[in-house]
Length: 441
Image 1: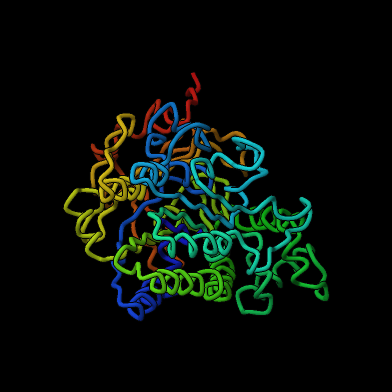
Image 2: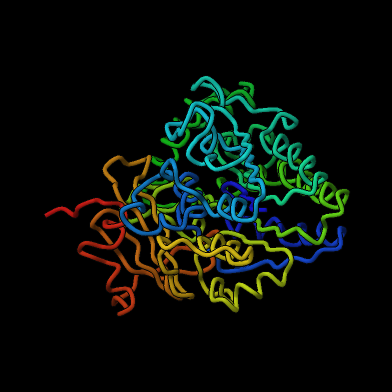
């Protein structure tokens, strides 16, 4: 089972105690858990992150420029299921992965759903003006778990993909269910001060308004363009409130349901469980193009690139360390390697078009656009040890890279470019090549 927790970065998961809580739930069911540090997401937003997590061939050009997988391609989970004569079940809450997006393979399936024997996904949420949350009982994840329960009792071999949407504090709808919590209240007071809302407006309705949220982001960019630090307590607080509000219903209760179903079917020895954040959410950063980023997407950074990874049984993490897929002692590694580990553990050969993995101790993360700045066609970061190359189009800089221990963290420019970063700063830096964007003359 492969489960992505949308927009949950490692720093936020650590503060919220996700590792400890997940380990406790698994222990109640007689299972152990490895909380693996150092995982770097292959992108800063949902579509390219999931593409590279499930289709490793997209790590290299020309496929690296794609936001979604090609129709007709087989991802790692489908490959395992079909090799072992099993079923592949897909359930995703994030509408980006579901039907009705621009990435369709047929009328009912997005490119991300392809290959599944049965797939459940959210349609586009709302009218375009208002976000319309789906009741928990009607979420795609629960439909997938319904199907899973029956297949478990039938004794089928199964591969399961799940995606939980709001658990990382994604905006929208971030504060819609925690409107009076301290961080969300501070964000509301900022919106009132910026004259985006009236003090007496219905807060939930406002938080579900797409125009209001777009105006809020524009106001944040203007207010904190030159100095991100004053925004961080407010942004981080609202994210923390959202995580605290949603984690039980949209992750822990679902995990309990999954484990209960596995145990009831007598399949407890069969479960392989990998849970990870697809990317994180930033409490405000000024990337290389100098345009303040109050959420995610665009150039990855310490808040969005570092993600939590949880593996059960814990021995599987040891197996993958021995195979050179994940690192020890918190060294950086690409979470794109997890699909390779699942394929190998299932006894399936890697396809010939899967490129070599990045060496342990380093990782790359990139997006081929920035939805805040249409002039950006390539935005990436390559991390090696305690330093990184960060690029937007042809402009690159080298600076420190570290765990963001507190909200005052900012990377420090390097006086000289380390030799191991020289290939990553151009002039035709690898993110140009990955995104098929020609550098300016």
